[in-house]
Amino acid sequence: MVVIRLPDFAMPVSSADRYALDLLVDLSRLVPVDGAGTDAVRIQVVDGSSPAHARFEPSEGTVMVRRSVLRWIVDVAGSAIEQRSTAVDRYGRVPSSENPLVSSHAERDPVVSRTAIEFRDTVIAAAGQRPIRFVAPWPNGHRWAAALTHDLDIVTWWPVFSLFRIGELVRKGNFRTAMRSARSAIAAAGRAPVMDAVQELLHIERELGITSTWFILCGTPTARSMRAGDLTYRPESPSVRAIIAALLECQHEVGLHGSFDTLESTRDFTEQRARLEKITGASVTGGRQHFLRMRPGLTQRAMRAAGFRYDASFGFPDRSGFRLGVADVIPAWDDAAGTPAALDEVPLVWMDRTLSKYHGLEDPRAWTRDALETAMTARSVEGLWVGLWHPNLVSALGFPGGPEAYRAFATELLAVNPYIASLDDLVLWRRARRAVRIARVSPSGVVEAYSLNTSPAQRIMLEDARGRALERVQVGVPGLARHDG
Image (cartoon, rainbow, N blue to C red):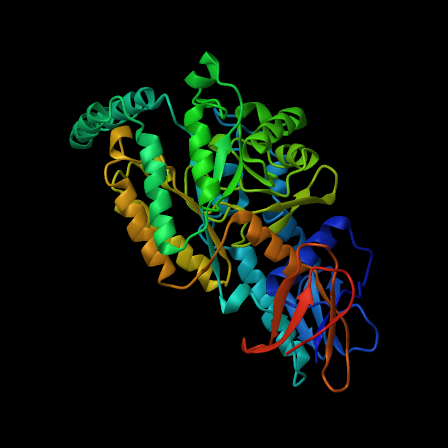
């Protein structure tokens, strides 16, 4: 059996190079071997370029990796270029134009994930006739994964936002939709259309067997925060408590929707996380920034210090795409510290308001066509697609046809068989998959594997280069575990 041995370096290696190499191996699904005596393909990192400008070069039992490729992976997947940027938009975000994939018009393709596939193919070529093993991409035989998420931005003050939205439609000249929304808003007077919309989404997901992730604002609203579109409700209010109770009853995940004040503030992250945990009675492990407002690197450092396991903020506000060049869960990189961060990134690929707010498309069916296109792109690399659908996209708030479009989209998504789970479950799975190591392979082919972390136990399937399942290993608890397949 051939696995991958990390690595034989031709010259000194930096922490950034090591991060990129570990990420490349993880995304390729290769299983590193730690024990001696096992025949393994070796990696050699080299400077310079080949005449053919190949990123990877195979030889018998060895793959050469260009250091320039590793630096590029850190710049893109590690967001190093964005972390070094000083540019800001009107919300204090790094503009999309600062992203290296946007500047090269490649943001709709997970180019780092595709590079990992190229690396995997090169390792197979270097292995020759020797058998080789990979970890299966997702649980239960699924070849790709999808996550549906929702940000709760509006609850009790919905008439104000309905007026803003109707004004937006009028300015666009979309009088028909504006009039339809106005009639729906008048009919909803005295009711709770956001709660009704939440219940409708929960009903759709319950029917389809979907577990989703919901992000909740947890600060105290002020006149200033209301004008800015930031904090608009108190999480302790009866209406929000009722929504959270409904989410928990359906066993969906609840995460923190970090307010504007959390941008670089560990204290605010900690206070808001504790406030949400007091309401839910459960640990809050993930967050997504409101308006995707963050400073790459600084915001994640504050999140990590506040005890979060993952961040779901790395998406574009004004376009669909793969901001980190991956369709997957990956470890974060802290460029200022020059080290990997103890935080996972779950990049956002698509959200509903991108097309209506920034591109002027008001037909929800056009939004979902774009969602499915990006989902199929993630599927093509056996990756993870993450989408965001806001629960306030209903007629009374200016979005006629929203729930119907969501149902049709979710149904079509399920038809192509993704593994669907909450973000935290997906992060735990990927941490377990990433932690698999081979201690040794006996002459008879028995695999002895172990895990580098103590995540909840997972059943990880090993497979050959054709994707055929061969062995299962129990990982998640440090120590050796023989295959049972």
